Length: 449
Figure 1 (cartoon, rainbow, N blue to C red):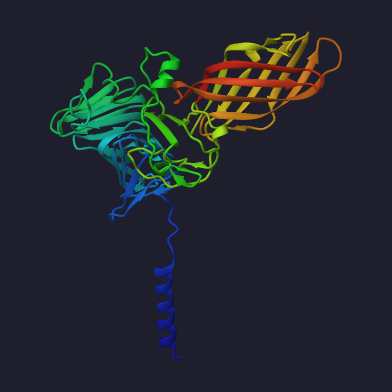
Figure 2 (cartoon, one colour):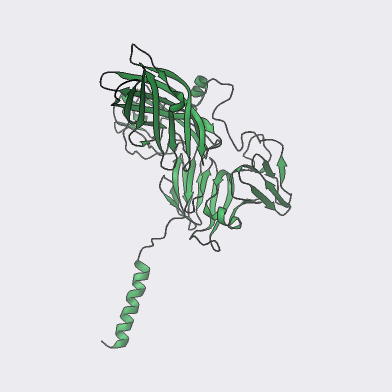
């Protein structure tokens, strides 16, 4: 074999290597939460269902159904919350940590979204923009929400509505530009008309309430059961349509609120004779009569309660929850006093964990407990964990014990941190001879964005 032949073989090998080696390019973004039917259409027209953990890339169009919604974290840290009944395009995106070339350009074709700026917008504001049919949204480093109405917003004029929660945006079109600051509402009616301010919030277009404010907590909870769907659910591997005496009621109430997406999902099981293997898609609640894949885990009826909630936590920052009401600890006979100044819950939204400290005075002793490890917050907002207890008597030696703590995050969204505003917490402290039990209601007292 001569030198030319050898070089030709090497060249062919290199070409084959280039073409057959799979691409390991990172995704432009990733879905961190999906509820309902949300689809992704690529530049080539390939359509797929968006699931939690799926990647999205430049050129992808994200389409949500009437009850579908998704949160997407882009590679630069930008958070996007796509509202129901929306069409949102990742128009031109590149992030390599290069301020001169990085860009984050989107296109809102329909519906609405909320965006919390990532590194691209913070380090080079001119590299970020959202295009719409009536104008463009630029930023000043911000947290804002937008809604495009085109005959699909009841009791509202067509156009682009924008509200700023933090930072600022600039609305631009052929008619001019407008700076919108926190607490202000901007509006663009047409590409040729200069953007203007609204005197007040445009109803519930940008921030919808989960329930009517005049309702009591009990009635609003009942109101959240808004639909009953019996299709495409399997009970012991039998389709619900084949079960004459078994019905599965799935109720979904979703709303965009002051957090990225405030979601209340209630699933009520009624008139079900079977006792095992009720299987539903834990990611996609059955909405829009869309068939859902049957996936693990199975849900045992005995362990299921119709008051379970699915919440959405922010993905950054932390919050301190302090006591606003409580039942003092008791051993069943004697009652102590909860030290509300030294009882608190800290939530870390980066990794969705919580830690608690609880202090009470009981029989002239100070009982203090702290969680031994960070408690994971489940998708329904619940948490539980163990605590180490230290008992310090007024006189004499201290002793140790063990305990537990559990609770649920909930309530309305707390605007400053985009997170549940309240916590209901139960605790137990035990020294081997005495067991103290108590409860505490807490609310947000400090935040670290």
